[in-house]
Structures are given as structure tokens and as C-alpha cells.
Image 1 (tube, rainbow, N blue to C red):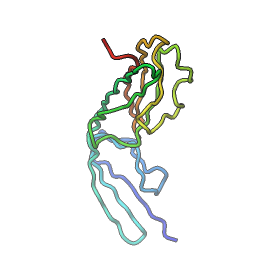
Image 2 (tube, rainbow, N blue to C red):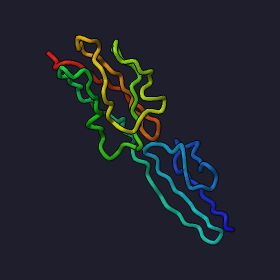
Image 3 (cartoon, rainbow, N blue to C red):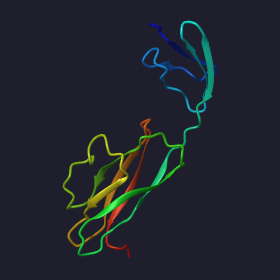
Image 4 (cartoon, rainbow, N blue to C red):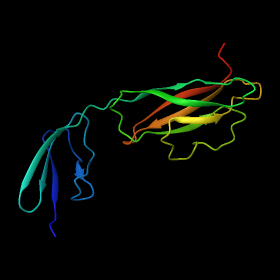
Length: 160
């Protein structure tokens, strides 16, 4: 059985802590945004070398569509939209409601659970109260690298 060996060679003073994790897996962690790296692979016979630059990380931004209630309907949906910068978000992206001010919403937070959901739609959310005052839902989104950002969504009658 051949044992493969991998390593990262850091070529700048600000890179430290890079590792292949777990050992000899070719999975590298703790790489720095905008870092330039050389990677080596050895299969017992031959060494192969590749270089890569880790792109600059951009904090994601996103919006939440307004959840309009049209009576006699008593609930509406919140949808995360316009995730930016497009094509640069490290998936999967998770969403969860971390707090809200609705007197009617009875589910525990974080909702739907501590991990979140990959679906960007929160369905059947109630307004603040039975007279359809606007409820505010605080939503946390985080990417596959655990970078996070918060935003708010609102459920209620058409804003005046």
C-alpha cells in the first residue's frame, strides 16, 4: 500500500498555522485570505507541485423579502434574496431565525434549530399580533467557513 504525503509551503511571513488536516489527506486548513501557497504531493516515487492564491474574503450581504400578509391569510413567508458577492460565497449557506418580537410565534429560537437550514425560505411566519402589526425576525446567515452576517425580515400588513 502506498502512503501519499502532502504539504503546504508558505512563502510569506504572515502565514502561520497552515496544516494539512487530517495528516496526509490533502485537506488544508487555516489558509489566509489573499495568501499565496505552494502545495506538494509525494506518492513515494514522484513529487508534484502546485501553487494557488487564496482570494480575498468579502463579507456576504443579503436582503430579506418583506412578508406581506393579505387577510384573511394570517401568516406569510420570509425569503433571503440577493446574496452578494455572487459566486464568491463558500457553501453551503445556513440560515436561522435567532430572535423575533412576535407574540404569536411559539417556536424556540434559534429556529428551525441550532444548525440552521440550507433553504433560504422561512414559511408560515405570523405577524406580531392578531391585528397584524409588523413582526421583526432577526436572521443569521453563515457560510461553509462559519463567517456570519445578520439581517432582519418583517412580516405584516402592507407598510404604510
